[in-house]
Length: 157
Image 1 (cartoon, rainbow, N blue to C red):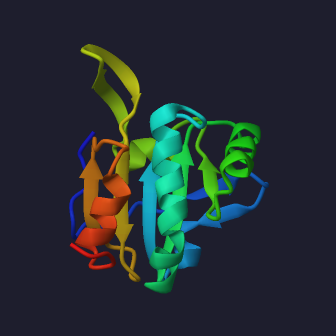
Image 2 (tube, one colour):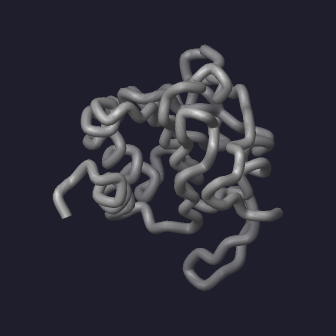
């Protein structure tokens, strides 16, 4: 699968949130979007990353960004994850990883020296016209949100 690059059109999608609502990228046209893909709710790295997005949410929102998290988890697992960690942004369920495939975030990865197939932790910044501004593949959970907000000019360097 070919990785997306800045300047590419963001693949469209419609996914279901933990509370059963549908979120479509097309409905967010005119808004900036931070779309992040993570492997599994309630795992250490994914919890760190989600809580960092939670803590930066007001800053991102004030700058006009909508934050969306995507994982292959079932809606019930996402609902528990969001409730346990007071996440103020939608978590989207992609159990057949069709959206992961469209964004090239499902594939072979290395974890603890072993190859496996699954979610490649990735974040995309999408502009108001649906064009990818930033495509970050395979980043670490810890410190990612701080780097992202700094790179977007939203935090002190």
